[in-house]
Length: 364
Image (tube, rainbow, N blue to C red; front, side):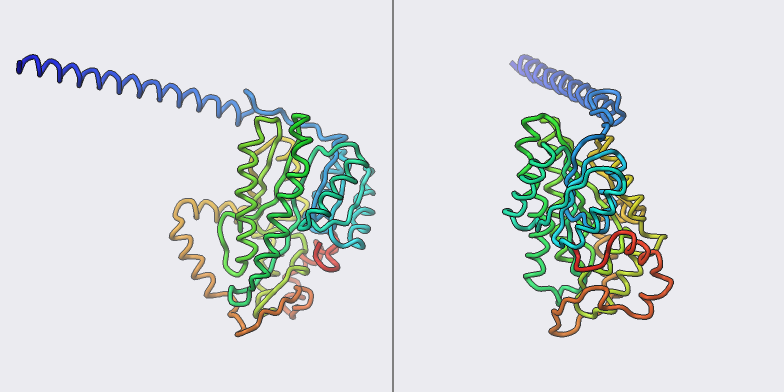
C-alpha cells in the first residue's frame, strides 16, 4: 500500500512536472512568436501600415491660428494637404490663413471654441461640406495657467479640462464614425511631458494633459483594428512664442521670467518648425508615440526608473520657484508681465518665434 502510494504520488509529481514543463514551453514559444511579430511590426517588415503619402488629404488642426498649431498647418501644407484652421480669434485666423495660403494649398478657416460641443459640430459639418471628407484630425488646442497651487482656482482646473480634454474628445468622437466606416483615418493628439510627469506650478495643465494621454493611448489600442492610426505626441519645451500669451498667477513677473527663459532657451527647448516636421513625419510613418526634446525624454526616463526619487527631486525644484502671493488669484498674460530680463537677449529666439508664429493677441 505504501509502495502504491509512493507510485501514485511519484506519478502525480512527474505528471505535474511534465505538465508544467509543457505549459512553460508553450508560453515561451508564444512569447517568442509575439516578439517576432512585434519586431516585424516596429521595423515595418510585417503588418505595420506603410508610410503614407499625405498629398490631397484634408487636415483639421485645432488651435492653429498661432504657435505649434500654425507650424503644423504649414508643415502639412508642404506635404500637399488641404488645411482646415480652427481657433477662437477670428483676426488671428485670418492672418494664419493668409500665411498658410502662401504655400499654395487650399486653406479653410473656421472660428471655433473646441470646449463647446455645438461649435465643434459646426466645425466638422462645414469642413466636411467644403472638402468632402476629413482624413486627419490634429487635436492641438491648449491653454496654460502657470503659478503655485495656492493661486489656482477650481475654475482654472475646469477651464483646462474643457479646452484640452473635452476639446480633444469632442472633435474625435465627431469624426470617428466616418473614419471607422471608411476603414482609414489619422488622429494626432498633442499632449505634453506634463501629461506624463506632473511638474510644479502647472497643476491644472498637468491634470488635463494626463487625461489626454490616457485618452490618446486608449484610442490607439481600440482603433487600430479599424485601420485608424493614432499618434500621441509628448512635447517638452518648444520655442513657439506662446509664453507671451500664457497666463500667470501669483508672482506674475517671477513666474513669467522662469517660464519665458526656459521656453526660449535653445539648449532645453526645440524649435517650432523642427517639432512640426517631426510630428508630420511621425504621422506619415504611422507611429504610436513621439516624445519631443531631449529634456522631455530625460525626465521621462528618470521618472520611469525611479518615480519616488523623481517626485522628491521635483519637490526640491518647487522650492526654487516663486512663492504665492497670499490671497491673490489674479490671472495675467505673459506680455503684461515683462521685466528687463524677459526683454533681454536671453529671450531673442522666443520673440523671433512669436513674430513668426502669430503670437499677438489673446491665446487661441
